[in-house]
Length: 357
Length: 166
Image (tube, rainbow over the protein chains, first blue to last red):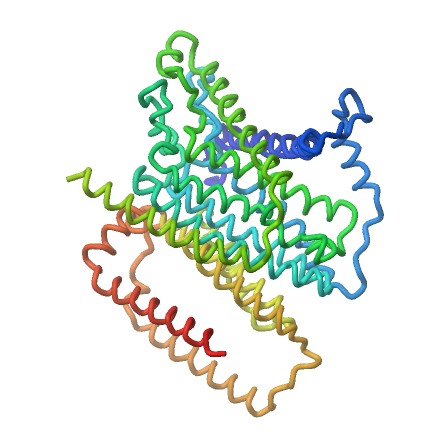
């Protein structure tokens, strides 16, 4: 039986890791919805949700239950199979990216090293691109299958926005990859460790500030967040691509946005802000005195803190900046960000060549 | 059968089945979605040949970019099998004969080639890895590589010229 000759411990370990990462993403996304309402409330000088549970902490569960118990309507003239496929695809593509993010350094369980990363593939950054480019389909299929003019318009808007900003995002990352020389996210994080000034000088943000800025703007556009939420602009398109959706299918679309936000925040922390690198701490020394497990755990917390800061930034921008007009959006993407990213790439390439000589 | 073989046959069956569904679907949007599935199956084959870079680039370029544009056009035109003009019956027959002849020629050409005697190296070759592929492209094949990029540039310029003509 060749079939049974697999490293079952490895399969088991990865399975547990996948379940934990998916559940954690869902949980964090759940509470991000709550945090968004609270942040909005603070910015607009209101109280925000405070009825369900202490400080309104049970609000996301109440919202979820409400969505599940609502009537699930599939419009008669819609394309039924694709109508169901749309939100499912949006959810799956949102979760898939988490597979290559290194959440922490390796654990040491009885001599067995367990890396806190689902898959350390040597094309990690490209994998993320692949999944992000698949993310368009959830919106497009959902919008088209609804058989509604507003939905179709919104879906086409959303898709053209996502493919436009993917270009600038890719070019800004090429500049980063010239510095790292590796596509593996684990290697990228390890290279950022142990720089000068408490480790902060090792982070890629120091070497690629412009690249980071472009990446950040494109991440906003890819997540369909304000100021780029043109595909759900309620004042022009009623409700955007999920207008015909109800119950948990609508919930999936809305929820996928928050998972996307969490994953792209984690990605920015990993690529530009040292990932699970704890600032002002030498991990190697700490691992000798405290053991690798505690250091790995602290690393996960460091990554999560950076991620949460980025999520807060996403919200802060959403409740501060008004929405772009469609022509302004395309102008920014094609005429400003792409030339800027190209210049950044050329300059980085020239500097790398010059320094290597 | 070990896991590699099971995966191989699964991916092969998936690729052929979805390719057939591309042709047989009556709804053009469904055809595009089946075609995306074909690309996924082929990428799976690339991964089994240890060509991860090719696999992911195949997904990004074909499934992620080109198919989105296909979907765009089809959704905007909103084609339905009822309202579309049906092709002539003789034209369909001629198409079937022409396609069948192409299949015959391909099979005949492959049957006598040396490809069938070469065993595929599963998950062993390293040429598909990004480092080796990049080195090969930019040293041994740098001229054809640059010429093909000029080809793309001219296509882009052409598209801009056509787009500005109104």
